[in-house]
Length: 77
Image (cartoon, rainbow, N blue to C red):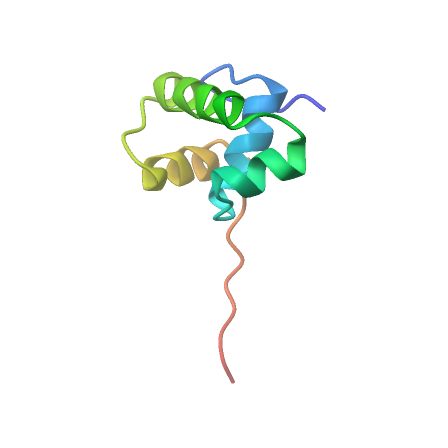
């Protein structure tokens, strides 16, 4: 599946970005996607560069702005 986004992220980069937004560690990402730690780090570096983000918070903001993730508000009764 290809997701539209303003940074022209590859489908794999979008997949990793979504995992990062869900607090997945590098080890969790590599286990889930069956890739090496070095590959995870390389993808993350490209994502930071393409999105011009400086932190994980910046990545989350990018993902929200580009509708790659959604925030659902839940209120306690």
